[in-house]
Image 1: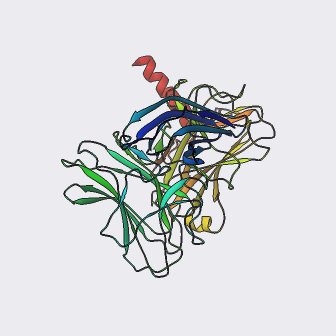
Image 2: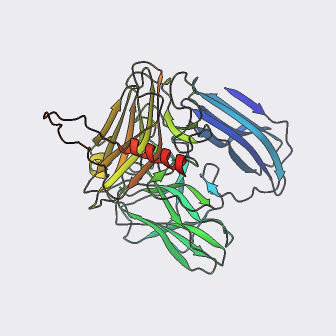
Image 3: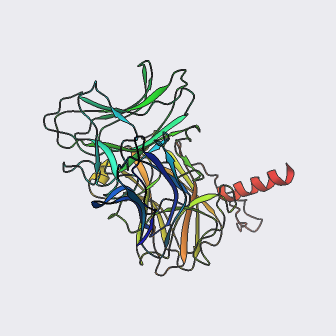
Length: 472
């Protein structure tokens, strides 16, 4: 453990102060970082913020409004998780007054000025760890993926009545701010109701921009919605609607973010900004995480040196650090939910498997019925194993499924460290995959078949790109 302590600070005063710092937590075995306030009379430590595990290869900011009216110290405390993970901090500042409104709220420090509405039937409750009812609700938050992280949830009860609601509203945003809102929600339980998200103008008019109903499995799910143009300031409202009297209907939400950029297309991710709707499973299911990284792998003679999207060291991709874990250890990557389609779906992705002991990558589809039955994987649809060289390869997987489903990538570690697997540019389209049939020339005059010419989609794509750049 390592601690960085401030000098003794005077009482925060009537308006308090905003404590801001930047942190970087990247790697498969990062550990945790905490911010505490310590007073000497009486001696007491108070936890005000914490993060655990990998947070991506990026600098992130934290701002905390401190109102403590005693002489105190600020302590930043880091705990080592393992050799494959580093923690760094930078740019610490203290500014008088409250912190400015943030576009992202993870509820780790409090409500972020989100407020309970007074014209509903219940309140959302800030919670960490499991909810109090069995067979429903999350076991951990989405932000930290640990039982110590916080989220808001709406508990279910045997005295609930159909149609009862609980609503929370965000701080007031200026009319021209924001183009997209994203959040993560958890709806697991046989008595699950409905989650609605509204955009509500200052005059009280509201528009429904997202809605989900019923059991969505024991996973945090991703939601996003484009914001409507507004001439008035507005709030985002998250509303839970009860289905019936039940003890298996606890719903939750976490990590609400307002973005000025347009919402990315559903089903596509190049990982340049974040992991989109893809997520790792929680502790206890698998033994490692998929990490968002760029440039060369930290392990020699393995992994990509550039991403596929930009073909540069500045572009991002997902990978699993093969130096962590044991032979057979697994890492799960889970997609958003897709509705069934008569035309089917096509999963297209680029993968990189390079190294002497790469291991195996599998693609499954899962649905609520299989997941409730106890399987985290589902039905196997694609598999690749072993060293494929230092280059990106493309794969297509056609899917036809009669129930709402999601994709699961599973990496299984090889016998020894020394083989990183990476993914990039994942696309799910609402139609079956198309591939050209092999081009087989006729027999020659002696009745012998001439060598056949087959053109893969990957080769064709490469040829077209070469043709374009050569001629155009």
